[in-house]
Image 1 (cartoon, one colour):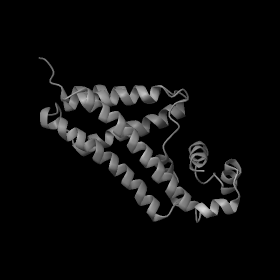
Image 2 (image 1 turned 90 degrees about the vertical axis):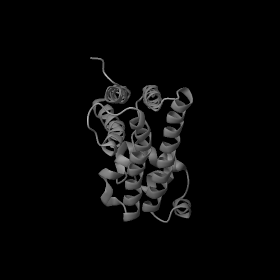
Image 3 (image 1 turned 30 degrees about the vertical axis):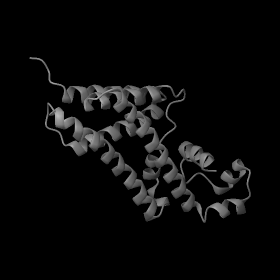
Image 4 (image 1 turned 120 degrees about the vertical axis):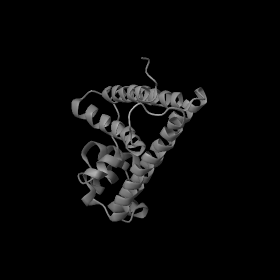
Amino acid sequence: MLEITEQAVLQKGFGATSIEEIVCEAEITKSGFFYHFRDKNELARALLIRHIEKDEILLDQVFERGKELADDPLQQFLIGLKMFAELVEDLPQGHPGCLVAAYCYQERLFDREIYDLNQQAVLGWRKRFRVILDKIVEQYPPNEPVDIDELADMVATVIEGGIVMSKALGRPYLLANQMMLLRSFVKLLFTKQAG
């Protein structure tokens, strides 16, 4: 049921996704739906929690692999960014979208708990990338003054913005290209230039 709902929400938004549509697609009764979820808001919460957990697993896998392949924190991060770019490049239809972004655009549909959960997800991305960037800064002072929290936010912004741009322009590979540009930026920011 959550998979069906996620696909529908990413295609047309939460407000346009009806309980009737979900139960029909899932081949369950309406009472079966209400056995699992008190209301549509509870479904939204469960869906968002599932989405955040899946994102965390994916990011853990990609950036842990970078740690396995290199000892240097900058190289670990650069490898992780490249692996993420390759992962999304392999999606033939492009990235399906992000529920965190979809929920932001329709925040009036949800209660405060979902709003807070969504905010926690974004702050979690900042914390994740801040930890990585702090390790890089210990060994590689940036070539330009930069706020590390804002740089951590930039990583998430490029991912989310790349998803939006690739969907809006119908160019599935655009997200991967944006990730590689971010990778180049990070490399330039922390690598001493000759001369």
